[in-house]
Structures are given as structure tokens and as C-alpha cells.
Length: 156
Image (tube, rainbow, N blue to C red; front, side, top):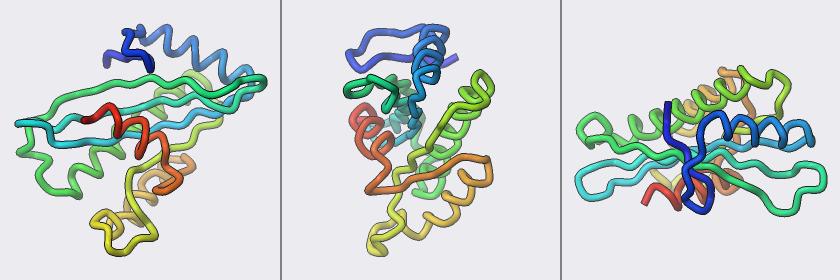
């Protein structure tokens, strides 16, 4: 199982993360999940975020991060990196939905669908289809804050 951290960098046991999600879900909160990766020295750092926001009476939000290092060889192509980010995001979402079948989950993918000059725009429809085909709502930039802001911050 992955090691998870809260927004302050404290280790959070997976069971504790599930407890936070359960409380958030019981207060009608939304769960946003996203991943991002960056090359750092000789490795890619893949960071995934679970963001809890919008519960009844909640001010602000809470997020949790997991990170992993990968050798760059298998992830050299942009397509492989984006697919890996999407797979990780989908895997986390399925795990959460297994615990809470009626939870509101939205997956955030760090790609652009609108800006045709951005390299990821060519992959947008494929990746969106992958997420939607797994049964999840999908947002891309500029609406993909869990990936483009939260996970991005922790992948560098």
C-alpha cells in the first residue's frame, strides 16, 4: 500500500485516510482525485492527490498526497507518462468507490483539451474516454485542480 501524507507532510495511515473520506462523504462532500509527474534528477516523480472539498459546513478543503519515483526509461514518451498518471488516478478512485459505492468522485487529469498548441491536447480525447469508460466524471485543465495544482505541487 502507498504511503500517504496530509497537506502538512505528516504521514497518514491508509485506514485513517479512509476514515477522513468516510466522514467527508457522510457530510455530502465531494472527492477530487488527480495525479501529475515531473522529471527530477534521474527519476520521474509521480504524485497523486485526494482532495476533500465541499462538505456541509466545511470551510476550505483538505488533501492527501502519495508519491512514487520511477526510472525514466519506460516513461520517456509523453503518452506513457499521461497514461500512467491517469491509471494511478483511476486506481485510487476505484479503491475509494469500493469502500463507498455512492460517493461523489471527480477525476482530474493534467491535460489540456482546449489549447491545441499544448502537447497533451492530442491525447485529451483518449484519456478522457479512458476515465469516463471507467465510470468516473473527468475534468481537464483549467478545471483539473487536484492534478494541475495539488499533485503538481508535490511532484516537483
